Amino acid sequence: MIDLSSDTATRPTAAMRNAMAQAQVGDEQRGEDPTINRLNQLVADMLGKEAALFLPSGTMCNVIAVKVHTQPGDALLADRQSHILRSETGGAALVSGVIVDQLPGHRGQFTAEDVLAALPTPSVYAPVPRLVCVEQTHNFGGGTIWPLEQLQAVCAVAHTHGLAVHMDGARLFNAVVTTGISARTYAEGCDSVWVDFSKGLGAPMGAVLAGSTAFIESARRYKHLLGGALRQAGVVAAGCIYALEHHIWRLQEDHEHARLLANHLITLDGIDVQQPVETNMVFFDTSGAGIAPSDFLHEIERRGVRMSQIGSRIRAVPHLDITPQDMEQAIAVVEDVITTWKR
Image 1 (cartoon, rainbow, N blue to C red):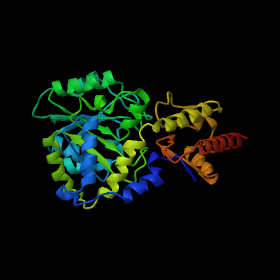
Image 2 (image 1 turned 135 degrees about the vertical axis):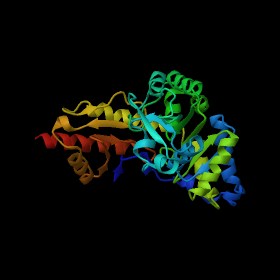
Image 3 (image 1 turned 120 degrees about the vertical axis):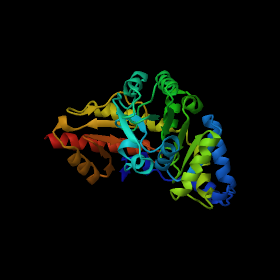
Image 4 (image 1 turned 30 degrees about the vertical axis):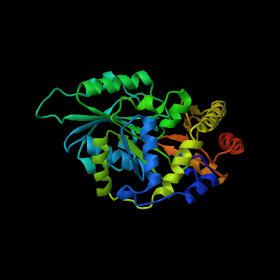
C-alpha cells in the first residue's frame, strides 16, 4: 500500500532503530533519563526557550499548554479549522474548561486585526480571553505556512492585551525547510511551542513542549496528572534525536513530491487543487469530475493507494517512506480512476 493518508504513516528507518537500540536510559519521571534530558535541551535550544518537556504526543502538548495558560471559564482564540479545535476530542474544553472563540482565518491564518476584533469589551458577562493559539504549518489550511511578519503581528497584539501565545508546531520544520527561517525565529514571539517527531521526521512517537522554566514546571505536573509519567523513555527519545540530526532537511523531498502530485492533478478535468502547495500536503476536490470523495478513496485503495478525506476534500501527504517510484505509481492510479470514472 502506498499510504498518502498522513505523514504519521512513517516508520523508523533501520538507522533510527539502531540508535534507539543503543540508547542510554533511566527513569524519565525522576529526570534521570540522559537521552530524554539531551533531547529536551536540544529542542529548547533550537526553539530559543528556557526549558522543554518530552511528551508522548502532540495532542498532549496542546492539552497541557492550554491548561497551564488558562483558568476554567477563560477564552481561547484559535482558527476555526485548527487542530486544537477540530481533532483533539474537545480536550481543551474538557480538561481546561475554556471557551474556544473561532477566528475566521484564511487557509488557517488569521491577522492581528482578527484578534483585536475578537477581544470583547471588558465585562462581567464575557469570558476573559487568555490565550491565542497558532498552528505552523496549518494542517487543514492545506499545509500552509504563517508569514513571519503576520505571525509577529499576532503575537504583538496578543501580548499588548495580556494574552499568551501558544504555537502548535507539529510541522514547524516543514515551514523551516521551505522558507529557510529558523525554528527559533518562528517561535520567538510565542510563550510556548512544541514540535512533533512522529510525522515527517519519522520517529515512532513523541513530541517536545518548550517554554519558560516556570511554564515547564507547571506542564510537568499536568503531564503526570494526565498519565504521561514515563520510565526508560530514552529508547524513544533516541529516535527523536536521530530525526533532528538526519531528517529535517530531507523534508524537502516530501514537498517536491507534493508539488509533483499537484501539478499532475491540475491537468485532470474536473479536479480542483488547492493552491499554492507550500509544504507536504495536497488538498483537492473530485466533485467536478463527477466522483464523490468516498468513491474516489475506495477506488484508489483497491489499486494500492491510500489517501484521506478532510471534509469534502481529499488530502494526500507524501512522507519519509514514499519514494519517487511510489509517487509515479500513485499519480498513475489517480489518473486512471478519474479518467475511467468519467467514461
